[in-house]
Image (cartoon, rainbow, N blue to C red):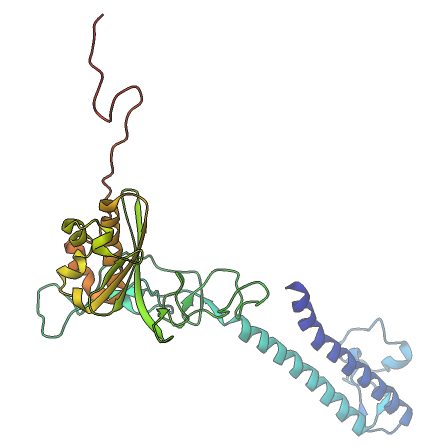
Length: 336
């Protein structure tokens, strides 16, 4: 705030004013002592007349550098005066360096991430790694396979892009913890922990990591979590077979991404759905499950994308038209 900044800038100025007052007292004491040890230079040595210095203090020869009638100061007083001036300059330079160092913590984003010269890391700009020994033409060791993010030129704090206008650590009276951004390369938001991962409480009260994805289909929505397990599948705390009305096509449609990659018996699926019917909810779970698998291993993305498991199905029921019996059906035409 402006008040704290004014108070921080006012402290070194008050210290410098106190130093100058002590220096003035030493000057008066040295003038009264009258011991000829050091002669103060006057403005007459610069070839110009001072409006403050009187004619008695100027001296007859103004171009020779020093006045012969100036007040004399003892050697100890002069040394103290010089030390105080040096201390004041050092304090001002130290405060400037501290302010400069604090302001340099937040820098602007530069460089190109695809060339490895950026001073920040976008955790959502992930890359697919090619296994060693896999040789194919026009395929590099790592290549982007997702959203194409533009070059970032905003503020960066410790290698993490941040919102403009924030100062770290954040004010605990205005913001909830954490007050520092996540580590470089870790994701944030959506209920993640400080290290960028999701955790839930297990049976023994221990934290267990999970991976999450959201999906939609028609009017249905779903939040899907996968945990390391033995293949259990529950929807709204009910077994998936019972929730999907014992219809095998809906069940297979919901867990198809895991079955396609032969990972069904290695993970437990916990889904929460609402809206729509069982068919739409199965499609929403399918999309959320594929996104959760992508969070677990980004190298699965090419296979999931090829199978169109990461594609939102936009097909919906066409609405009925007013004045007509259905979406396409029309009233029979009668001439009279």
